[in-house]
Structure formats: structure tokens, C-alpha cells
Length: 227
Image (cartoon, rainbow, N blue to C red):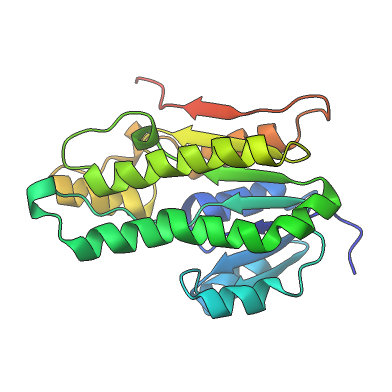
């Protein structure tokens, strides 16, 4: 057993999730959630106290089994997510279902299973949302709807579980593989220097987690600084 507080981070094999893991590594034992076991092992090997936590978040039985051994959890960071762009007229039902399943339903189910462990620790939940969770634009229908739903989920969780701290982080465009794919689907160039770095978003997460006990950081809105 470790004396460090424990943080579980989904989507930890790359992007914002991996950056959050690196930011919390000096102070926390990390459970690195994701699908790619080898990628999770590679991230864990670079950190002082981390273990891969591979699970398919959309598989209810696998999720129940994976969470059954977690009896105390100080931090839960929801970073896993997907984005598929397209007009409403061209977005098929499969995209709506998969987007909501991963971005919302899996978040709700993972949180539900871990609530006893979070309550035991008086823990904190951080949800990596998006600017699309505050403003919906053309061609972002399914993704924006999922992020608006994630915002509502955070608000309800905060109200229902007052002993927990619940933070929604709304990053602007961030230099990740997902952003590269989004820019390609938009027919635009991917210019990482124009975006936030994953490390910047991770520092926003760390700010919320390390806030003094009398503070509850409900929301953080982070945008790239104009260059």
C-alpha cells in the first residue's frame, strides 16, 4: 500500500490525460486508465508511483470488475473522450450513440462505481470538458451535446455530493492527436503553436486539486493566449 493519495486518470496514455499524470506524479500514486496496455505501461514507467489501469470504459461488466478493488480514491480525473465532427444532416445515429456513450455515459458509470471510494477519502472529481461545452457551433452537434451533458452531470454531482469537490475544466483548442484529427476534418492546417499545450491544461487541473481545503474550484475556463 502507498501512503500517497491516489488519483485515477482516464485517457492517461496520451494528450491531456498523460500530461495530468505527469503533473500529479510528484504527489500522488497514479492509476492510469485507458485501452492501450502497452502505452499505459510506457507512461507508468516514467513516473515514480504509477500503475496501468486498463479497462474498456463502455463495457459495464469490465468497469464494475475493475473498480471493485478500489476502496479509497482521492482524485478521479475524467480525461478520456472522442470527437467526430459533421453537420446534423450528415451525422448518423452511430456517431451520436458512440459519442454520448464514451463522453457521458462512461463518465457517469465510472463515477457511480467509485463514489464509495471517493466518499471515503473526501475526494475530488475533475471533468475535462471543452469550450464546446459552453458554446455550440455548426458541425459540432454530437460533441457539443455530449459536453453540455457533461457540464450538467458535474453540476448535479456537485449538488448531490457536497462532501466532494467537483471541477469542470473547459480548455480551448489544445495541441493533441484529437485536435490534429479535428483540424483535418475541418480541412484546416494543424498548427500546434497556436493552441494550448496539454501541460497547460494539466496545470489548471493541478490548481483545482491543490487548492486549500476551504476552497472549491467549480469551473476553470482556459483559452490559448493570442499570439
